[in-house]
Length: 348
Image 1 (cartoon, one colour):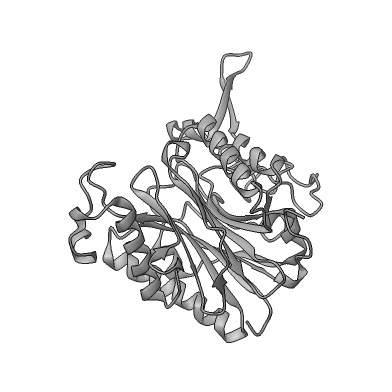
Image 2 (cartoon, one colour; image 1 turned 180 degrees about the vertical axis):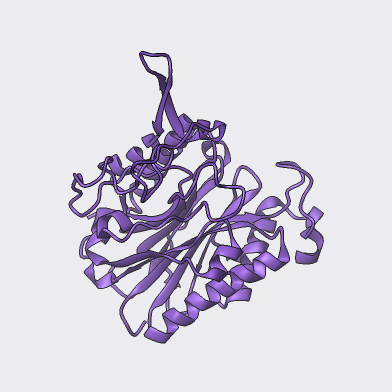
């Protein structure tokens, strides 16, 4: 880690394992990031979502690529298959994924989609592995302490919020906040997530309400006003039901706006969106695939951090290359940070 900096990338791989051609595109995206990081001497950590394992009991009858990707799929547990899938991704991209021998850093989701963490050779696991799954979450959450070359390890996590259920999504964010700040393993922490909703963070650090837009938050409301077109009101669409709170106006018409409850839980719980804190140029991570026009361009993927990490943040950007737009319906987000600037642990 010649530069003294770490790149933390969050990437929803769009049912990784269900389509070999698309998976290879994702491999190329990750290998490009690994090469760019190595060129400047950065270490690399990747939080991935949507590792699919074709479970026979949850979510249908498996995927068409089940057999080619591993032997004896029907005889393995879901956890074993999820771990195998993460190892396959690690081998294809030249990264590590085992925090102990034969123990991949995988979070087994309650549905067909699972999470994982990968890291480059410059880093090493430092204990503190934790995962939350089962009935507590629709998908899962996991985190792992990594030795990044400073006095205390830094925790890196991956979270995939539920795709529907406004109230349940907020409840899940409470679970994540509790896990991040649970003693005795509280650390300075970064979490890569697909939040499946609109964030509630204010721009800047300390956060400040902006008077330049109709909304004070860093993220605009994509269900009311298209980004860059403040005079264009979006018509109601049935797909908004899992994203918006609604009400009846005095004249009987429907009113609605993006539901930010889950995002406010993360903010109030002490987790900071890296892009908002840095006032990075706003960029969408979903909405670029065909068939998603009803909801438009939105920023669902991000990196959130404990306040102790904010002084160490260097940059945060969305990777919107032509390759990335083809590889997944989510664009990856990468936050760069300097571990030496994290001077106080979350527990201290």
